[in-house]
Length: 192
Image (cartoon, helix red, strand yellow):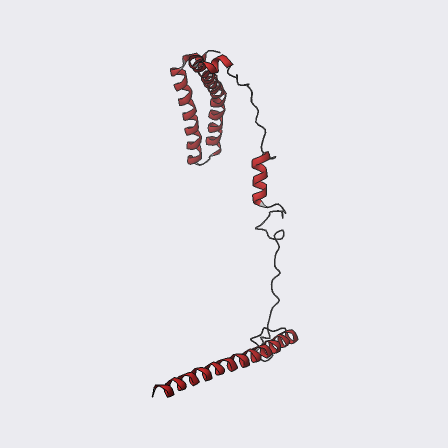
């Protein structure tokens, strides 16, 4: 009794497979002819594949021109052939040509071989370098403080926002505070 059921099952599977293959073959053939007809219809009418001549709208306005990067008022950037990553790598390696040059007004004193060999002498070398730095800060603060005070007075006269004026006043306060702290901790910075 099992043999006829197995034979019947095999026959059903084979027929189903043949039906599937025939259907796929026919659908592919119909799809190819449909695509060919659609592309022919599209090139003839200029209408997309889902519309025919009767369904096409009659009151079409021409599309707005597409703006390129140089035409757009929102994108005033000039086109560049340089990749951003390449540009950044070059700037890291060679520096940015647009950056202002750094002018060092003092040449740092190098430690002597004796100072490098002796920890006490090297501590004295470091103390001299720190003192030079502190003196430089106090000297720069003495010229910067009057300039900032004048800028704050000018900003108040022009009626700038209180937040902007407060920012300048805070900067002035911090410079004065650091100058006073250095002068109290290291009175020798006031000697020229």
